[in-house]
Every structure is written in structure tokens, then in C-alpha cells.
Length: 189
Ligand code: GAR
Image 1 (cartoon, rainbow, N blue to C red):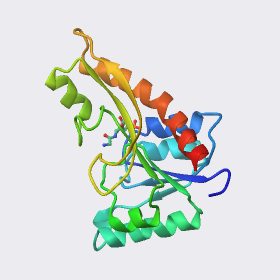
Image 2 (cartoon, helix red, strand yellow):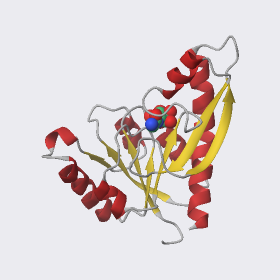
Image 3 (cartoon, rainbow, N blue to C red):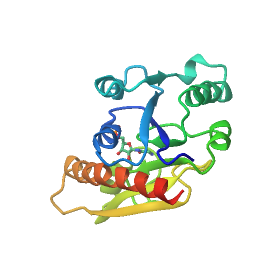
């Protein structure tokens, strides 16, 4: 891998994590592409503001997952992407992308995995009544929110915390921890 690898961010929604990565002044790689599966997602506006090219592709318009992922791989090759950073990308990565970028796909999840996998992890933690939840950054494998853990940070849930309070605390940790962890994995490669 080059000393300053090219990064593609995959996102489906708001894009606050992408924003935090783009705003981080000391990123050890260059963000060259946003891949988005939702044509109306707010993250596309954020990309425009940063003059970041976007590849928008909905699996609905493709024959199957393989065709969908092959079209993404072509875009990644065009931009010479080395590392894929999932930032609120709400789909499982399939075998084609996994093999093309083996060991170079990372994900962030708003819980202390392996607790509270899947959708609405923050709500799951609040509903379960746990006192501690957090953020996990991990390499991606074929499972949902599985794969070797790279970094974790705990977030305490106070008795008076609303769901919104917990979301704010989790996002603050995510926005600080993700750029730092991206740098760590790039520097170790
Ligand atoms: C983040 O909290 C991220 O951890 C979560 O989606 C949110 C995206 O927010 N990801 C998952 O739940 C993955 N299983 P953002 O669009 O504002 O970055």
C-alpha cells in the first residue's frame, strides 16, 4: 500500500462520521470517494460541500448483489481505492467486495460488540437498561457487525439520560475515535 492510501467512505444516511473524517486535519490517507446506496441521503450533500466525488448505486437497480458490488468495485478501481471505511453503511458486504479488499475494510458500530449487533444498537442498549455501552471499530468479515475488533471505547448511561443524550455521547466518541483508528490501521500496514 502507498504511504498515503486512498480511502473510500461507504455511507447510507446522515454522514456525520464521514464529516468527522473529512474534517480531521491529520488523516494519514486521502478520502477520494463516497459510495452511497441511498440517492436521497444527506451524506451526499456533505460530499458536495467537500468536493468529494460520490458513486451512488442502489441494489434495487441491479440484477443481484454480485452485479451491485461489481459496479462498486469498478468505481473503487477507477479511484485507485486502497481502504474502505464503512460509516453508517447499512448493508452487509458481500463476497465480491470482501475478496477484492480483504483485510482493508473497517466498520464503526455504536455498541460494545458483541453486544447489540444490527440496527438501532443505541436503542437496544437503552431498552436493555445497561449502564455501559460504547463504540466499536472492527475489520469487516462476512457477518453482521462481526470481525476482529480494532478499538473500543465505553460510554456510560446515566439514570437520567434520554435516548438522545446517549446518542449524542456515542456520536461524540465516534467522531473522535474513528479518524484516530483509521490512522492507526494505516500506520500499521
Ligand atoms: C453511526 O452511529 C454508526 O456507528 C452506525 O450508524 C451511524 C451513522 O451515523 N453504524 C451502524 O449501526 C452499523 N451497524 P452517521 O451517518 O451520522 O455517520
